[in-house]
Length: 48
Image (cartoon, rainbow, N blue to C red; front, side, top):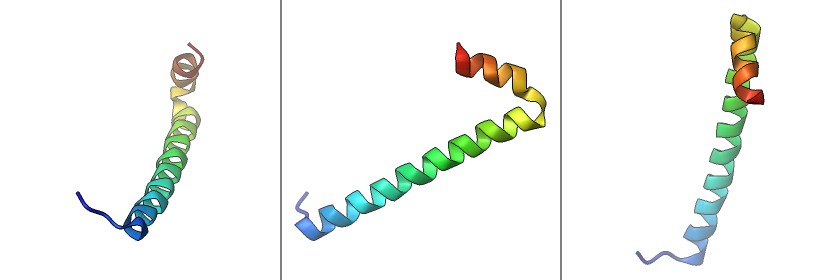
């Protein structure tokens, strides 16, 4: 696969943004689960 340095740079920016979005989404889900009522189960999983 031939990619120019510009394309590689664009992909790395996209990858960084994607990783950040995934991390934020994961934390939102964890916090929502704790608040909704599965708190003890989620904490047990996180701390085990």
